[in-house]
Amino acid sequence: MNLLERLTFFIKDNSLFEADDKILLTVSGGRDSMLLTFLLAKAGYQIAIAHCNFKLRGAESDLDECLVRDFAEAHGIPFYVRHFDTEQIASERGISIQMAARELRYSWFEELREALSFDKIAVAQHLNDHIETVLLNLSRGTGLQGLQGIQAKRDRLIRPLLFLKAEEVLHYVQEYQIPYRDDQSNFSTKYARNKVRIDIIPQFKKMQPDFERIFEQNIAHFKESYALLQQFVTPLRNDLFIKEHEAWIIEKEKLRKYVADLPLLYELFSPFCFSKSVLADLQSCFDKESGRLFQSEGYDLLLDREFLIIREKEYKQEDETVITSETKSVSWRNYCFRCDYSHDVSIVRDKQIAKIDAHLLIFPLTLRAWKTGDYFYPLGMTGRKKLSDLFNNYKVNVFDKGNVPILINGNGDIIWVANYQLDNRYKISGNTNKVFILSCK
Image (tube, rainbow, N blue to C red; front, side, top):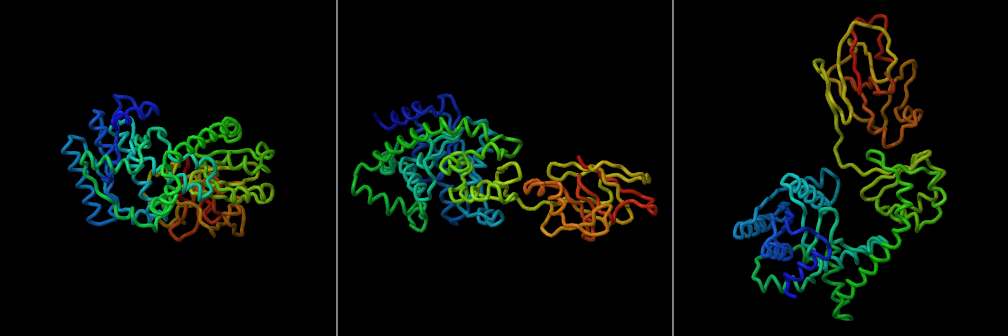
């Protein structure tokens, strides 16, 4: 079979997409993505190009963009580009530049796919990328799941070049005279993946010249073993892990009989990427340390009194909402607040409504989340109380207490822990003649 026939066979054999699907190609300007673009255009598929300029290599990044743009124009392919200030975004989010670039590009690709009604997003990773991923995962201890490498198809993301070796990619771009640009950072062994590609795999090939194809067969065996294991694990996980809104809830009593089995525990929690050492720590304090938080790269796990709660990590800055004396309504996260004034000094016993002595307020007021060290003077008490103690009394878990709206006066005092308790200093009294009413829904 020629290259185009091999590509067509791989697409059909893996059910990557249908002939009339619209495909959004993620094209960096490197040899792999340029070859994929050339082949899909030659085969007559409906394609468009999406290019990210991460502004990380100065003029080199701009030259990559020019190459891809010129190729798209020469072949009549729709072209879309997005520029990112990647270093600044990485700094703001407290993550690595590589992770920031990954999050930015995949977020934009999906945004573009939805906006323009594309059916699939194609990434030009090849067989050597597949093998490198497995070797990296092996060194990181990711278990059997990590030994499956890169999937040819995951939801709307497809990888049509996984059947091609890196040396074949180079051969074909030269044969078809396809323009491309090399990212010089790919040749530096300070990056783990580059070290695997440049230093480690050539040593394997000295022992076994057909290393890539043999390793491809091994990956297929790993996948079969993992699929067999999942026939047992998946039904058990579905029974234990209950999705509620943005969290997964696990009853401790239902999990208890499996907790001592670390290999099983590791497989049950594998979709959330918790390491074995973290899960071993969970085992040791399962009945001892309620409120303990465990973390993986993308998730937080809370060991609560009766449940385990897993939530995806949020990468966002602290948010605050201002209320002026003229504000009628305002939103904070998932809450809506309505502001009003009255001369009615009667008491209401609804924790979603705060009636406050208006003359004690210093505008603007602020709505924000709880912070460590926050305290107030609860209604009916003369002493002060830490908000952390209030939350403990109400059995509010670590995740939920970060989403409780806190109303702050202009002088920094906490006026109201919304939906829980008013501060005693701001209650209406016999001297009150104007009331500020704040209701929370």
